[in-house]
Length: 190
Length: 190
Image (cartoon, rainbow over all chains, first blue to last red; front, side, top):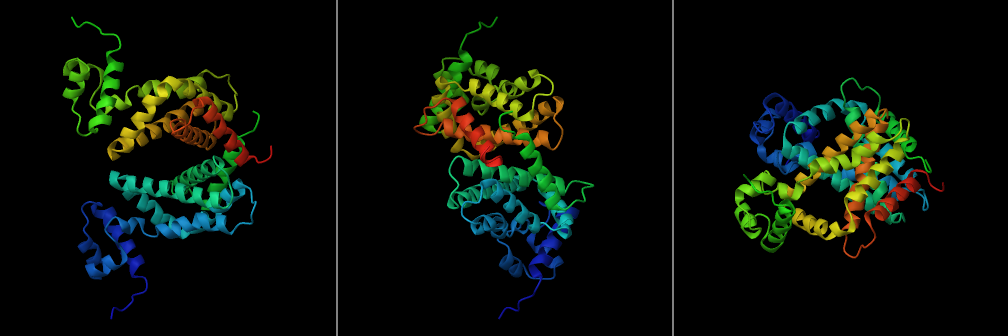
Protein backbone atom coordinates (compact mmCIF):
# COMPACT_ATOMS: atom_id res chain seq x y z
CA UNK A 1 0.00 0.00 0.00
CA UNK A 2 1.12 3.50 -0.85
CA UNK A 3 1.25 5.80 2.11
CA UNK A 4 -0.44 9.13 1.26
CA UNK A 5 1.82 12.04 2.04
CA UNK A 6 -0.20 15.18 2.56
CA UNK A 7 1.40 18.11 0.80
CA UNK A 8 3.56 16.00 -1.52
CA UNK A 9 2.02 17.56 -4.59
CA UNK A 10 2.61 21.10 -3.34
CA UNK A 11 6.16 20.21 -2.24
CA UNK A 12 6.90 18.85 -5.72
CA UNK A 13 5.54 22.02 -7.31
CA UNK A 14 7.57 24.30 -5.02
CA UNK A 15 10.74 22.24 -5.49
CA UNK A 16 10.31 22.10 -9.27
CA UNK A 17 9.80 25.86 -9.53
CA UNK A 18 12.93 26.46 -7.46
CA UNK A 19 14.99 24.17 -9.70
CA UNK A 20 13.53 25.66 -12.91
CA UNK A 21 14.48 29.12 -11.68
CA UNK A 22 17.98 28.15 -10.53
CA UNK A 23 19.00 25.82 -13.37
CA UNK A 24 16.54 26.54 -16.16
CA UNK A 25 13.43 24.57 -17.15
CA UNK A 26 15.02 22.55 -19.96
CA UNK A 27 18.04 21.70 -17.80
CA UNK A 28 15.97 20.24 -14.94
CA UNK A 29 14.93 16.57 -15.02
CA UNK A 30 12.04 14.82 -13.28
CA UNK A 31 14.62 12.67 -11.46
CA UNK A 32 16.21 15.81 -10.01
CA UNK A 33 12.86 17.25 -8.94
CA UNK A 34 11.86 14.00 -7.26
CA UNK A 35 15.23 13.67 -5.49
CA UNK A 36 15.15 17.28 -4.27
CA UNK A 37 11.62 16.76 -2.93
CA UNK A 38 12.71 13.48 -1.31
CA UNK A 39 10.27 11.26 -3.22
CA UNK A 40 10.68 8.63 -5.93
CA UNK A 41 10.13 9.37 -9.63
CA UNK A 42 7.16 7.01 -9.44
CA UNK A 43 5.60 9.28 -6.83
CA UNK A 44 6.26 12.28 -9.09
CA UNK A 45 4.38 10.59 -11.93
CA UNK A 46 1.51 9.71 -9.60
CA UNK A 47 0.94 13.47 -9.24
CA UNK A 48 1.94 14.85 -12.67
CA UNK A 49 1.83 13.42 -16.20
CA UNK A 50 5.16 15.06 -17.07
CA UNK A 51 7.56 17.84 -16.11
CA UNK A 52 5.53 20.51 -17.85
CA UNK A 53 2.35 19.66 -15.95
CA UNK A 54 3.96 20.67 -12.66
CA UNK A 55 3.35 24.23 -13.91
CA UNK A 56 -0.12 23.56 -15.36
CA UNK A 57 -1.73 21.22 -12.87
CA UNK A 58 -5.22 22.02 -11.61
CA UNK A 59 -6.66 23.01 -14.99
CA UNK A 60 -10.10 21.65 -14.06
CA UNK A 61 -10.21 23.61 -10.81
CA UNK A 62 -9.10 26.68 -12.73
CA UNK A 63 -11.89 26.30 -15.31
CA UNK A 64 -14.46 25.55 -12.61
CA UNK A 65 -13.51 28.75 -10.79
CA UNK A 66 -14.88 30.70 -13.76
CA UNK A 67 -17.77 28.50 -14.83
CA UNK A 68 -19.28 27.53 -11.44
CA UNK A 69 -20.61 30.99 -10.54
CA UNK A 70 -22.14 31.17 -14.03
CA UNK A 71 -23.87 27.81 -13.61
CA UNK A 72 -25.06 28.78 -10.11
CA UNK A 73 -26.51 32.17 -11.07
CA UNK A 74 -30.26 32.88 -11.16
CA UNK A 75 -31.80 32.42 -14.62
CA UNK A 76 -31.88 35.71 -16.50
CA UNK A 77 -28.81 37.16 -14.76
CA UNK A 78 -27.34 39.65 -17.27
CA UNK A 79 -24.18 38.41 -19.07
CA UNK A 80 -21.94 41.16 -17.71
CA UNK A 81 -22.97 40.30 -14.15
CA UNK A 82 -21.98 36.70 -14.93
CA UNK A 83 -18.62 37.92 -16.27
CA UNK A 84 -18.08 39.98 -13.12
CA UNK A 85 -18.90 37.01 -10.88
CA UNK A 86 -16.59 34.73 -12.86
CA UNK A 87 -13.75 37.22 -12.40
CA UNK A 88 -14.47 37.69 -8.69
CA UNK A 89 -14.39 33.92 -8.32
CA UNK A 90 -11.06 33.84 -10.18
CA UNK A 91 -9.78 36.54 -7.82
CA UNK A 92 -10.44 34.19 -4.90
CA UNK A 93 -8.40 31.54 -6.75
CA UNK A 94 -5.40 33.89 -6.67
CA UNK A 95 -5.01 35.04 -3.05
CA UNK A 96 -2.08 37.28 -2.11
CA UNK A 97 -0.10 34.37 -0.66
CA UNK A 98 -0.05 32.84 -4.15
CA UNK A 99 1.39 35.92 -5.85
CA UNK A 100 5.08 35.04 -5.43
CA UNK A 101 4.50 31.53 -6.79
CA UNK A 102 2.53 32.94 -9.75
CA UNK A 103 5.16 35.59 -10.47
CA UNK A 104 8.01 33.08 -10.42
CA UNK A 105 6.02 30.59 -12.49
CA UNK A 106 5.37 33.26 -15.12
CA UNK A 107 9.10 34.04 -15.42
CA UNK A 108 9.79 30.36 -16.09
CA UNK A 109 7.00 30.24 -18.69
CA UNK A 110 8.10 33.44 -20.42
CA UNK A 111 11.61 32.01 -20.88
CA UNK A 112 10.45 28.86 -22.74
CA UNK A 113 8.32 29.28 -25.92
CA UNK A 114 6.71 25.83 -25.60
CA UNK A 115 5.47 26.76 -22.12
CA UNK A 116 4.11 30.05 -23.43
CA UNK A 117 2.15 28.13 -26.04
CA UNK A 118 0.79 25.78 -23.36
CA UNK A 119 -0.33 28.85 -21.39
CA UNK A 120 -2.05 30.32 -24.45
CA UNK A 121 -3.77 26.97 -24.97
CA UNK A 122 -5.00 27.09 -21.37
CA UNK A 123 -6.55 30.53 -21.95
CA UNK A 124 -8.10 29.39 -25.25
CA UNK A 125 -9.60 26.42 -23.41
CA UNK A 126 -10.98 28.78 -20.77
CA UNK A 127 -12.67 30.87 -23.49
CA UNK A 128 -14.35 27.75 -24.90
CA UNK A 129 -15.57 26.52 -21.49
CA UNK A 130 -16.77 29.91 -20.32
CA UNK A 131 -18.58 30.48 -23.63
CA UNK A 132 -20.31 27.10 -23.22
CA UNK A 133 -21.30 27.93 -19.62
CA UNK A 134 -22.80 31.25 -20.75
CA UNK A 135 -24.74 29.60 -23.58
CA UNK A 136 -26.04 26.97 -21.16
CA UNK A 137 -27.19 29.82 -18.97
CA UNK A 138 -29.26 31.12 -21.89
CA UNK A 139 -26.95 33.82 -23.27
CA UNK A 140 -27.42 33.94 -27.06
CA UNK A 141 -24.72 34.23 -29.74
CA UNK A 142 -22.74 36.26 -30.57
CA UNK A 143 -23.07 37.75 -27.05
CA UNK A 144 -21.94 34.54 -25.27
CA UNK A 145 -18.69 34.28 -27.22
CA UNK A 146 -18.05 38.03 -27.00
CA UNK A 147 -18.66 37.94 -23.23
CA UNK A 148 -16.41 34.88 -22.74
CA UNK A 149 -13.55 36.33 -24.82
CA UNK A 150 -13.87 39.67 -23.05
CA UNK A 151 -13.85 37.99 -19.63
CA UNK A 152 -10.69 36.03 -20.47
CA UNK A 153 -9.03 39.19 -21.85
CA UNK A 154 -9.82 41.04 -18.61
CA UNK A 155 -8.57 38.05 -16.61
CA UNK A 156 -5.35 37.82 -18.61
CA UNK A 157 -4.59 41.55 -18.31
CA UNK A 158 -5.50 41.53 -14.61
CA UNK A 159 -3.26 38.56 -13.95
CA UNK A 160 -0.33 40.25 -15.78
CA UNK A 161 -0.81 43.38 -13.65
CA UNK A 162 -1.30 41.40 -10.41
CA UNK A 163 2.12 39.77 -10.83
CA UNK A 164 3.83 42.95 -12.13
CA UNK A 165 6.79 44.23 -10.12
CA UNK A 166 5.65 46.58 -7.39
CA UNK A 167 1.94 45.70 -7.65
CA UNK A 168 0.53 45.00 -4.19
CA UNK A 169 -3.25 45.41 -4.65
CA UNK A 170 -5.22 42.18 -4.45
CA UNK A 171 -6.45 40.41 -7.59
CA UNK A 172 -10.05 41.59 -7.16
CA UNK A 173 -8.99 45.26 -7.03
CA UNK A 174 -6.89 44.90 -10.19
CA UNK A 175 -9.66 43.02 -12.02
CA UNK A 176 -12.31 45.58 -11.01
CA UNK A 177 -10.09 48.39 -12.28
CA UNK A 178 -9.96 46.66 -15.68
CA UNK A 179 -13.69 45.88 -15.73
CA UNK A 180 -14.37 49.54 -14.93
CA UNK A 181 -11.99 50.61 -17.72
CA UNK A 182 -13.85 48.33 -20.14
CA UNK A 183 -17.20 49.76 -19.01
CA UNK A 184 -15.83 53.27 -19.51
CA UNK A 185 -14.38 52.43 -22.95
CA UNK A 186 -17.60 50.86 -24.23
CA UNK A 187 -19.99 53.82 -24.16
CA UNK A 188 -23.09 53.22 -26.20
CA UNK A 189 -23.81 55.92 -28.74
CA UNK A 190 -20.46 57.63 -28.42
CA UNK B 1 17.66 44.68 -65.85
CA UNK B 2 14.76 42.83 -64.31
CA UNK B 3 11.49 43.37 -66.10
CA UNK B 4 8.73 44.20 -63.61
CA UNK B 5 5.75 41.93 -64.04
CA UNK B 6 2.62 43.54 -62.71
CA UNK B 7 0.57 41.06 -60.69
CA UNK B 8 3.42 38.58 -60.17
CA UNK B 9 3.06 38.78 -56.41
CA UNK B 10 -0.68 38.12 -56.54
CA UNK B 11 -0.18 35.31 -59.07
CA UNK B 12 2.38 33.66 -56.78
CA UNK B 13 -0.03 33.92 -53.83
CA UNK B 14 -2.92 32.46 -55.80
CA UNK B 15 -0.78 29.66 -57.22
CA UNK B 16 0.72 28.83 -53.82
CA UNK B 17 -2.68 28.65 -52.14
CA UNK B 18 -3.94 26.34 -54.88
CA UNK B 19 -0.94 24.02 -54.44
CA UNK B 20 -1.19 24.09 -50.62
CA UNK B 21 -4.84 23.08 -50.89
CA UNK B 22 -4.27 20.35 -53.48
CA UNK B 23 -1.04 18.80 -52.14
CA UNK B 24 -0.74 20.09 -48.58
CA UNK B 25 1.39 22.96 -47.27
CA UNK B 26 4.32 20.86 -46.08
CA UNK B 27 4.39 18.89 -49.32
CA UNK B 28 4.65 21.97 -51.56
CA UNK B 29 8.08 23.47 -52.35
CA UNK B 30 9.00 26.99 -53.39
CA UNK B 31 10.39 25.52 -56.64
CA UNK B 32 6.97 24.03 -57.42
CA UNK B 33 5.16 27.30 -56.66
CA UNK B 34 7.56 29.27 -58.85
CA UNK B 35 7.28 26.76 -61.71
CA UNK B 36 3.49 26.69 -61.54
CA UNK B 37 3.40 30.50 -61.60
CA UNK B 38 5.88 30.49 -64.51
CA UNK B 39 8.59 32.50 -62.72
CA UNK B 40 12.06 31.63 -61.38
CA UNK B 41 12.72 30.81 -57.72
CA UNK B 42 14.76 34.00 -57.60
CA UNK B 43 11.64 35.95 -58.54
CA UNK B 44 9.70 34.16 -55.80
CA UNK B 45 12.27 35.24 -53.22
CA UNK B 46 12.18 38.82 -54.51
CA UNK B 47 8.53 38.86 -53.34
CA UNK B 48 8.52 36.61 -50.26
CA UNK B 49 11.14 35.78 -47.62
CA UNK B 50 10.03 32.14 -47.52
CA UNK B 51 7.13 29.80 -48.29
CA UNK B 52 5.24 30.71 -45.14
CA UNK B 53 5.27 34.41 -45.92
CA UNK B 54 3.15 33.84 -49.05
CA UNK B 55 0.29 33.46 -46.54
CA UNK B 56 1.35 36.31 -44.25
CA UNK B 57 2.60 38.99 -46.62
CA UNK B 58 1.33 42.53 -46.16
CA UNK B 59 1.61 42.59 -42.36
CA UNK B 60 2.46 46.32 -42.37
CA UNK B 61 -0.54 47.21 -44.52
CA UNK B 62 -2.68 45.06 -42.22
CA UNK B 63 -1.45 46.87 -39.08
CA UNK B 64 -1.79 50.27 -40.77
CA UNK B 65 -5.39 49.49 -41.63
CA UNK B 66 -6.18 49.51 -37.91
CA UNK B 67 -3.80 52.19 -36.66
CA UNK B 68 -4.15 54.84 -39.39
CA UNK B 69 -7.74 55.88 -38.58
CA UNK B 70 -6.69 56.12 -34.91
CA UNK B 71 -3.75 58.39 -35.77
CA UNK B 72 -5.92 60.49 -38.06
CA UNK B 73 -8.79 61.02 -35.59
CA UNK B 74 -9.51 64.37 -33.94
CA UNK B 75 -7.87 64.76 -30.50
CA UNK B 76 -10.25 63.72 -27.76
CA UNK B 77 -12.16 61.21 -29.90
CA UNK B 78 -13.56 58.64 -27.41
CA UNK B 79 -11.68 55.28 -27.39
CA UNK B 80 -14.69 53.23 -28.51
CA UNK B 81 -15.18 55.51 -31.52
CA UNK B 82 -11.52 54.85 -32.37
CA UNK B 83 -12.10 51.10 -32.00
CA UNK B 84 -15.14 51.32 -34.28
CA UNK B 85 -13.19 53.27 -36.92
CA UNK B 86 -10.30 50.81 -36.77
CA UNK B 87 -12.74 47.94 -37.38
CA UNK B 88 -14.51 49.77 -40.20
CA UNK B 89 -11.13 50.37 -41.79
CA UNK B 90 -10.31 46.66 -41.38
CA UNK B 91 -13.64 45.84 -43.03
CA UNK B 92 -12.52 47.77 -46.12
CA UNK B 93 -9.34 45.65 -46.09
CA UNK B 94 -11.50 42.53 -46.46
CA UNK B 95 -13.87 43.20 -49.38
CA UNK B 96 -16.23 40.44 -50.52
CA UNK B 97 -14.01 39.52 -53.47
CA UNK B 98 -11.33 38.55 -50.96
CA UNK B 99 -13.55 36.18 -48.97
CA UNK B 100 -12.81 33.01 -50.97
CA UNK B 101 -9.06 33.61 -50.72
CA UNK B 102 -9.34 34.29 -46.95
CA UNK B 103 -11.50 31.20 -46.41
CA UNK B 104 -9.12 28.93 -48.32
CA UNK B 105 -6.08 30.48 -46.62
CA UNK B 106 -7.64 29.82 -43.20
CA UNK B 107 -8.16 26.13 -44.04
CA UNK B 108 -4.48 25.81 -44.93
CA UNK B 109 -3.49 27.57 -41.69
CA UNK B 110 -5.82 25.49 -39.52
CA UNK B 111 -4.22 22.29 -40.87
CA UNK B 112 -0.64 23.23 -39.87
CA UNK B 113 0.06 24.10 -36.20
CA UNK B 114 3.14 26.23 -37.02
CA UNK B 115 0.98 28.39 -39.31
CA UNK B 116 -1.66 28.74 -36.58
CA UNK B 117 1.05 29.99 -34.22
CA UNK B 118 2.23 32.50 -36.84
CA UNK B 119 -1.37 33.72 -37.14
CA UNK B 120 -1.67 34.11 -33.36
CA UNK B 121 1.60 36.04 -33.38
CA UNK B 122 0.15 38.35 -36.03
CA UNK B 123 -2.88 39.08 -33.83
CA UNK B 124 -0.66 39.62 -30.76
CA UNK B 125 1.41 42.06 -32.82
CA UNK B 126 -1.77 43.86 -33.85
CA UNK B 127 -2.78 44.25 -30.17
CA UNK B 128 0.60 45.80 -29.37
CA UNK B 129 0.49 48.24 -32.31
CA UNK B 130 -3.12 49.24 -31.77
CA UNK B 131 -2.50 49.76 -28.03
CA UNK B 132 0.47 52.01 -28.88
CA UNK B 133 -1.62 53.98 -31.40
CA UNK B 134 -4.35 54.52 -28.78
CA UNK B 135 -1.83 55.66 -26.15
CA UNK B 136 -0.27 58.06 -28.66
CA UNK B 137 -3.76 59.42 -29.22
CA UNK B 138 -3.97 60.20 -25.49
CA UNK B 139 -5.93 57.18 -24.25
CA UNK B 140 -4.70 56.35 -20.72
CA UNK B 141 -3.94 52.92 -19.26
CA UNK B 142 -5.49 50.49 -18.57
CA UNK B 143 -8.15 51.74 -21.04
CA UNK B 144 -5.79 51.75 -24.05
CA UNK B 145 -4.77 48.11 -23.61
CA UNK B 146 -8.34 47.04 -22.81
CA UNK B 147 -9.61 48.86 -25.92
CA UNK B 148 -6.88 47.37 -28.15
CA UNK B 149 -7.45 43.82 -26.89
CA UNK B 150 -11.20 44.20 -27.22
CA UNK B 151 -10.86 45.54 -30.78
CA UNK B 152 -8.66 42.61 -31.80
CA UNK B 153 -11.08 40.15 -30.16
CA UNK B 154 -13.98 41.67 -32.10
CA UNK B 155 -11.88 41.61 -35.28
CA UNK B 156 -10.89 37.98 -34.77
CA UNK B 157 -14.46 36.83 -34.07
CA UNK B 158 -15.78 38.87 -37.00
CA UNK B 159 -13.21 37.44 -39.34
CA UNK B 160 -14.06 33.87 -38.25
CA UNK B 161 -17.75 34.56 -38.92
CA UNK B 162 -17.09 36.38 -42.21
CA UNK B 163 -15.34 33.28 -43.61
CA UNK B 164 -17.81 30.80 -42.04
CA UNK B 165 -19.66 28.50 -44.44
CA UNK B 166 -22.86 30.12 -45.65
CA UNK B 167 -22.03 33.62 -44.38
CA UNK B 168 -22.66 36.19 -47.11
CA UNK B 169 -22.94 39.49 -45.24
CA UNK B 170 -20.04 41.87 -45.76
CA UNK B 171 -17.29 42.24 -43.14
CA UNK B 172 -18.62 45.57 -41.83
CA UNK B 173 -22.06 44.08 -41.12
CA UNK B 174 -20.56 41.14 -39.24
CA UNK B 175 -18.20 43.41 -37.27
CA UNK B 176 -21.00 45.83 -36.34
CA UNK B 177 -23.11 42.92 -35.10
CA UNK B 178 -20.27 41.94 -32.76
CA UNK B 179 -19.60 45.51 -31.62
CA UNK B 180 -23.31 45.90 -30.87
CA UNK B 181 -23.29 42.59 -28.95
CA UNK B 182 -20.32 43.82 -26.90
CA UNK B 183 -22.11 47.09 -26.18
CA UNK B 184 -25.24 45.19 -25.15
CA UNK B 185 -23.21 42.85 -22.89
CA UNK B 186 -21.41 45.71 -21.14
CA UNK B 187 -24.36 48.14 -21.05
CA UNK B 188 -27.52 46.01 -21.15
CA UNK B 189 -30.76 47.66 -22.18
CA UNK B 190 -29.20 50.93 -23.22
